[in-house]
Amino acid sequence: MENVVLIIHLLLALGLIAVVLLQRSEGGGLGMGGGGGGGGAISGRAAATALGKVTWLLAIAFICTSITLTIMAAQKSAGSSVADRIGVPQEDAGETPEAPAAPLGSDLLPPSEGDNAPLVPSAD
Image (tube, rainbow, N blue to C red):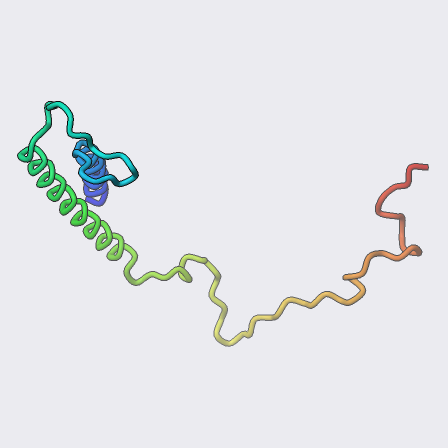
């Protein structure tokens, strides 16, 4: 069911993009005004009103599918937590987990000259 709603959602998104791009630019948004010139196949106030109604219809349907997908995702994940997915084995209640041993101070220092062979062989 979720896949069907997702496919409808994607088709609505593509349709909404197409209808918005078909509409005539009425403002000078980015300096691109819709010139008043000759009549095209889509012209006049009636076409603008029809495209506006289709845009509203697609937008409302898009929002409805968005809400539906959100509800489906929330129901699927109900009762689970991100911490549950980590997969850390549960410790017995009677035993306390042991902390990892801290490194000794000498383990953090580089080897001295007197220690075993050097780490980088010399070019001699």
